[in-house]
Amino acid sequence: MPSSSSHSAIVEPKTQWLEVILLWVAGVSAAMQFAKFSISFDTLLNHYQTSATLTGASLSAVGLVGLVFGVSAGMIASRVGYLKVLVGALLLGGVLSFIQSFLPPFNLLFITRMLEGLSQLGVVVAAPTLIAKLSAPQHRSLTMGIWGTFFGVAFAVCGWLGKRILDQQGLSTLFLSHGMLITTIGVVLFFILRKNPVLDLVPVAENQGGFFAQMIRIYRNPRALLPGFVFLFYTFTLVSVLTYVPGLTGDASQNKWMFVLLPLISTSGTFLAGAIAQYWMRPQRVALMAYVGLAISALVLSMLNDVPVLFGLVVCIMVLFLGMIPGSSLAMIPALARNPSEQAQGYGLLAQFGNLGATLGPPTFATALAAFGLSGLVVLVLCVCCFGIVFSLLAGRLNTVS
Image 1: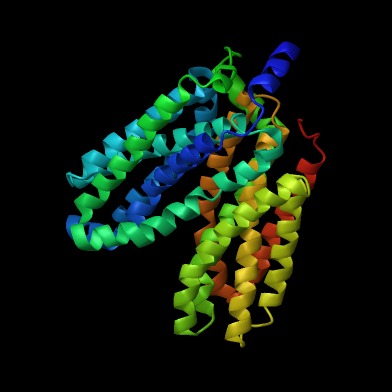
Image 2: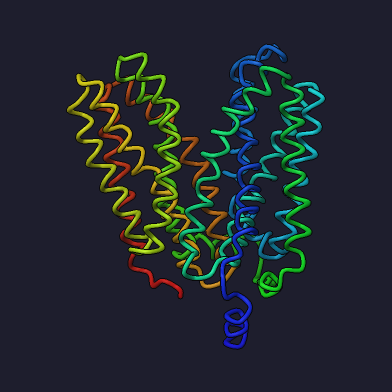
């Protein structure tokens, strides 16, 4: 193993930025599997004449697969090979988008959405593992911060360009455009990375016992588990804050710009966290700082309900701290993991816990808001911060892998 380390040091002197950016684009194209249905929700309702519940289920079906199979994906990727899983997942996503472009019967459309969940999961497990391997140690937290922006960027691009395609060309062209994008990036990555000498050194895990025995071992590994727990309370909170908080100001014009601005602020926070974790402090401390900042801004928010401008400003600060949490969580995984297999397991758990948080968070926040108003939301955010702080502190006790 020492000789492998020294060999790695020879062939990986610097960050391969082109490859890192292409892998990030792959992540953006995978996240568009969520975003394309989000922006076309009303159009889908009109075309298929189904209930909002069924159409909503087709939107969330992608995340449901990640909730169930997150850890399994990390195990499969470490055995089959990360590049194979990545390219296979992207090409599968392309085929499914092409099928959707024919606007098939709703039952078939729903099946394609379930399969897109496998595609999306393959990308979010394999791509960051490859990014970490293609990044020099002095840039790894920074590249993880860049990677962490893929979800917000996908929604921003779909909200701008995708909405224009939908309005001018229709649903079929929207899905066809996505199919062309995700297929193209899959083919490009295959030809660019298949002979990359750095990736030749990424070991594929050998058989380490039965499936369930491996799963138990992963869940008992704090290096893979704790970044996922830190991430869980972010996804539990973010969607709810972006959805419900702007409407609490009572100012219609302010609500409109907050819906546009807040996702961009969240994405900026993710990149900022990666930069801070790279140059100033360990990612565990960045997560701790983000949760403390979130708690303080939530307390301040509870006192400003009658001042719309200040309320909006504090919400922006709150979302900036929220956005820093995924950047620090993603940076934690390569910092703590002792090998690429452990990294893939960490990203699998991150996907699983992230989908769990996104599933449980909105109804919980909606209930708290309905029962107690703004104070209910603030108390819930403070509870979330308590858990986030505890898991950030526990992660901080682990030794960072150099």
